[in-house]
Image 1 (tube, chains in turn purple, red):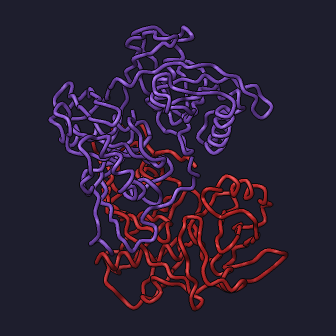
Image 2 (cartoon, rainbow over the protein chains, first blue to last red; image 1 turned 30 degrees about the vertical axis):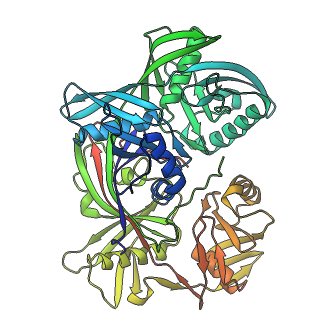
Length: 333
Length: 249
């Protein structure tokens, strides 16, 4: 049965439908003194563990997770590395909500009601999550995301249609487009068509327009596409690299949307904006403050969402398994 | 609050995923929640999932089995044999010379020596389509590279070639192949009917599937030892927003 193999223990949660596999045990010692260095060591020397945990057959196209490590900074409860099928992220909103929910509900941090604070040391910096707890259950998690901003609006010709796209940053660059302009409706039955059109359009925009972070010029590509439908509540779906649909409303994508709404004058400071995903889950975003620097308006946004614990797994890694690294039916970007 | 736990384990056979759950585990599910669908669909399952639920008769020891999947069941006998093999390995049933299952009202019998390998099927040819184990296969030699990096082109080719005449479409190039079902779903693992075709009709001794698995074809038999993925416990919280999960292909 090969149970006498390398074991990894995980707690799985879903945040509005998007999975987070929090790895509790099984990791080797990672080299480095900071979480950034440890992430780099994992990427360079232990990437097979990421592939093992998130790729099919153990995971699926948008499986993601956090590697939980003892805190490397005194103010933190834990240090974390964010992993997904596409690689590594400096920060991830839905994973933060999922991991904090698991840590509080399972008692890995001291649970206090009505609020428990969880401090994570992430490669993007220290993130404090405020967990609203009632009868031991985490009702929702709120955290302040990285500063978001609207970069520009571009028009491109795509499959005979003129398509308007807002390019905004919320931790990644998002191309925000009305789904109707692509002849698409946001229905999970259309997911393959949505992914194909979004990725193709993203490549067209990247070939025709310069997309560059004003402070970090190495962030120089449109990577995520965010399709939306107007309504009483704005529905969206974010297509994440290398080519999957975010099941949740996407934390960083929601921050980018808030930056766009603020630029259009449709949202003010302290307003709460509700964003709904293609699977019906919702995040609440609140615009905390805005400031202008060199012609760009930077927005501080808090994201609130809920997660549910759904499984505990003992995974077995066996060298005799030819598919130890899994496989992914999506090309590399 | 968590109001239901379900114990299970996952195995894979050449990358094909099988989740095994004893029927008793599904009892007393919370009102309004479809526990079976929750274990098949996302976020607990996925489009890759094959879900096997079994019941052992307390008196006769007979096994009754159901199989569910989102995209359809391929390699039915391979999955069932692997399930039996895993029960024996886990000490859940005693090792015997042969095993009998009630599957969808049919009786399936497997010898102990058949649990990890299966003889390949005979191959026929009618109107340009191969016929293997009652499945019609369209085989196309292509210039496309059969690697994940070219998956977009492979998908487009599959859609272009779909004329609704086959159960499986197989694109083959340079010792590698990609298979799809009639709904254009890519099947990245080996399909026994396709392997039979490579063996009997083309004399192929090895082929690589889209998931990168290298399949050796020896003595007219297909080897399919399973790999244990995980022992798992699933939870259902009564406040969860998904009562039966969802499917995204």
